[in-house]
Figure 1 (cartoon, helix red, strand yellow):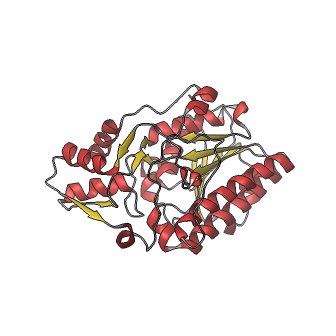
Figure 2: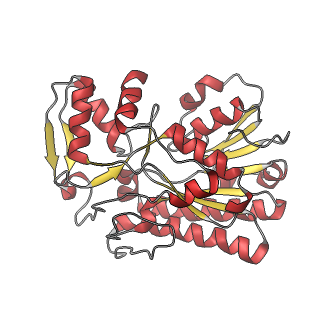
Length: 324
């Protein structure tokens, strides 16, 4: 599915990041001009190398909140995908001030500019907002159970949840067209393990013959969504008027334990690497709390846009290994 034709550029904040760069490629492929706003704190220009020479691409190196002329950039746009955020569990645990300030301040400034210009926004939130819920499958209407503020691990979830509240407040009070997506673990080529993402960490370790470091007992389960499926979901939600004011889970519902994930990476890569179990306290922080299970319900997404991510985990691992 392609975006509706509009000669005005689409703005992608965080467009040099892993997910953002794939979205930029897709938008350009669909015939659109794109303006990227990225401060390159976690993104990288290398992620945009395949489209660097495209005259329809404009890259602005800046925080959203520090960009002079932000209002003009947004006024000239047809749509905004707001993906800029602090990312990765290791960054969140080690830099809580940066996490909170980035997630709150950048979103606040972006929403105000979009509201003034009457430009619709898709805001990328996170499955982390479900917190310590014990449900076997998370639905968008679930109550949310966040851990205590004494554990900095929950600051990311709370800051993104406040962003959701703020986005919906702009809709209700000022009429801003906004759609919220809660992204579950998105993976694929160009993702780095630098900030703690587990699958690229495992692949890097397997390639180099190092032990795959599994945090905790490895029996926690996750669902891994191929980035191409995530992008297709975002594009379809952009084209779904009925999705305005709604929250959608975006992810895969194929569950796997982290230990099984490690075993699959070793098998697919043919690596002689072993597995090393690391306590959370050693790997991340004292008292670190993890969600044992995290699986999205995709019924709402499929109902609204007639699509659900379908790329299998085995296929994803193969694609990432092939990408080098």
